[in-house]
Each structure stands twice: as structure tokens, then as C-alpha cells.
Image (tube, rainbow, N blue to C red; front, side):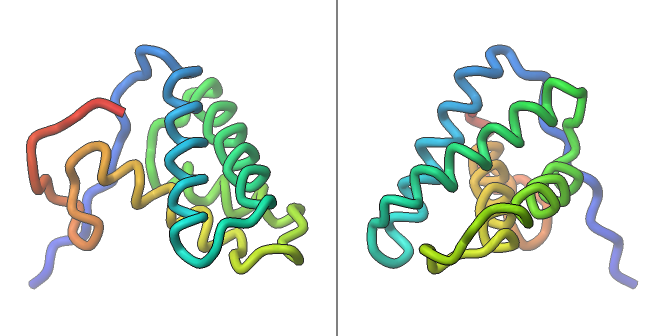
Length: 117
């Protein structure tokens, strides 16, 4: 029988502003590389990073809960000038966080040595 995937908890932040800036820049790069660079990608990345920072300031460290918060709060964002939507953004944030922690996206297991955000 398969075991459920354990929740993934981020380590306490040592520098939340730096973490947010890393997420904004990394997500912006990812967005630009997926299709074509668009001006709205910077705004999307900035908004997702703001949500992430606020959630972390409120004590949220569970990756799954962070994803749900980003999906929920991005519902009010106007994606009409973008190829993306709220779910794609939240999933990308999750993937970027898991990559930064050295955790396989599919299984929640470590794949290589941890590197800080």
C-alpha cells in the first residue's frame, strides 16, 4: 500500500525579505522562460512573492498551505494579459520551493543535498 506524501514544512526564515526577493526573481525568470517574456510577468511574480512573504510573516511554513493561499489570493488578479493563471503560478512557486530544498516534486523525498533559499 502506498504511503501518503508527508507535508513539507519550510525551515524558519533567516531573512524573509531576501527570501521574497529570491522568489520574485526566480518566478519572474521561470515565467519568462515558459513562453515569451511579458511585462505582466514581473507584476505576477511580485504579487506572488508578496503573498508568500505575508503568509510566512503570519507563521505559515507548510508548502501546501502556501500554495492554497497563493491560488486563493491570485483569484482577484487580472490574468487577461498573461498565458498563466493562479493555479499555474501557485504550482510554479511550489516547484521552485521544493527545488530550493532539494526535494523531488513528485514524491516529496530529498533528491540532493539541501541548499538554502
